[in-house]
Image (cartoon, rainbow, N blue to C red; front, side, top):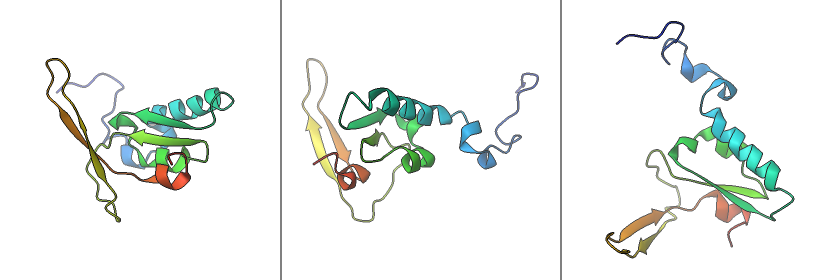
Length: 115
């Protein structure tokens, strides 16, 4: 595999040891911070929803507070200590089959936004 001039692979630049601010995934934290800042005077509480690329530890450590929570599709399966979960079935519409979704609640319940 050829590599573009001046471009390093993750292993070559020791990606795991880089601070989060120097990683591409930091954009998800920036989006969450910008969203909180833009909406803080507009809404009383918010749930920021992201796809699995936003599933990074630093974001869960930095973003949730009394005014904002995160709802992010997990990148990998995790087991919760208290086994808190429930499932929802979405009925089929038009040509689509029904789908089921298993939800595991974490910080949102604890912070009080979702009551």
